[in-house]
Length: 161
Image 1 (cartoon, rainbow, N blue to C red):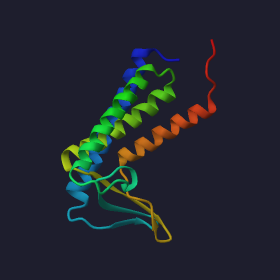
Image 2: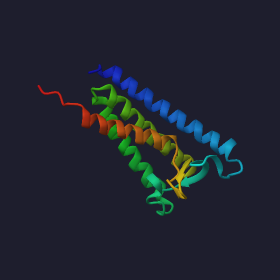
Image 3: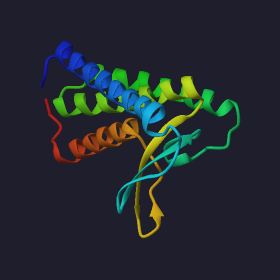
Image 4: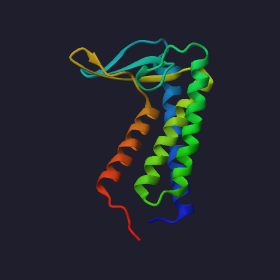
């Protein structure tokens, strides 16, 4: 168990760091690396690309017109509020860090939707001609945070009183 105020501060710090790293990486990609846009081969299985995601994870719901970004932004804000309540009540360091990562990733992508109307994706992994949908630092934070939450739920025992 960790004290409430300390855990909230740690979770908030993790979220702020995730947002900062996400936004800094996207600014660097947009202003320096992808000016002009192109495919940059880094390894035989990894490229840097520029992709605009107007949908949610992996491009789902990418075709909802002008209202799509507004709806997805409102949904993400509601999720961030719910996760913040969960963070407020979290009792383990794993949960605190994981929730901070998910919150930070969600906020990073909300910032993109507000600024660009779409999320900036640029990390492109591929094997034998099959490409995983491009993603970004915020998406990585969300996935890592969610994985930590799942692993914690699988491998820790609930305290009984």
